[in-house]
Every structure is written in C-alpha cells, then in structure tokens.
Image (cartoon, rainbow, N blue to C red; front, side):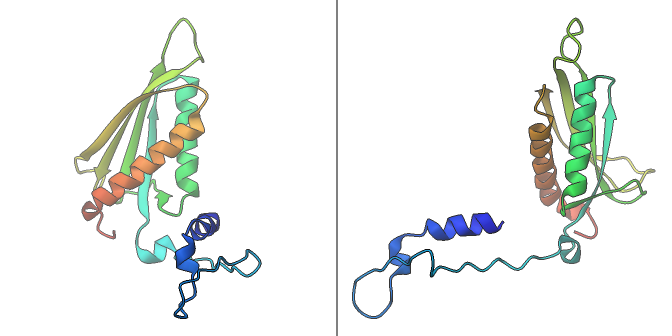
Length: 164
C-alpha cells in the first residue's frame, strides 16, 4: 500500500507541486525533500468488513486440489476474510474440478467455482455467482482472481451478512 501511495504522489503533475505565492512559477520538489506519510491502517475486523468464508472442493485431480488449497491460503492471509467451519452466516466457495484430458493426467484441470451464501446449515443457500475455468501451473494467480471475485460478491451482497 505504501508503494502505491509513493507512485501516486510521484505521478502528480508539476502544477500540483507549485507554490501558491502569487507568481506562476512551478517548482518541482526534489526527492530528498518529499515525504510521504503512510495512510493509517484500519483493522478490517474493527470496521465490520470481515466476511466469514468456507472453501469446499470436489474432485480428485491434483491441479484442482492445488487451486482449492491456494485459494484457502489466500483467503486465510487476507484481512477481509476469515475461514469459518462454524454454523454461521457465511460465503461458501464450492470448487468442482476434473482433469482436462483423462489421457494426460496432471497437465491441466477444468473447474467451476460457485459462490453461495448460507445463513445456517439448515437453511437453503442463495446462489451468488459462478465462474468456470482451466488451471494449469498458475494456481496462485487463479486463486488471487477468485479471492478478488469473492470480495466483490461479498460487497455486492453485503446486505445478506448481518454484521457487514
């Protein structure tokens, strides 16, 4: 986040850096004089923005299992989600995967991801979205993409979550 702030500050036009002393000359500050304050970090849990989530995987292919594990690790590392096995309102990410070519195992897997909101285990879940795809060796990038989509859906359907 700090790198993003530095880049944005450096990309500001020189007119922004001009002194407001009445004359029209604009001075470009040197890097030695430029200071960038880091934005104050807010705890997502304190703000009530943490989405409880469960990742479920169905399939016996290696690439699909790696994708499910990478997504679960990515969500566990994110301050926007917490992995939950409790019976609580949560986002369920269901991944179903199969080998793309049965004659060439381990090469790639086809998958379908379905996002479901479930109030509790005895209540029928609400379908939120679906994404099909193919994964080979890029499980981390695919998991990152799925985590972003999960966050987008959690924001879009945030009214379903009592604490969001």
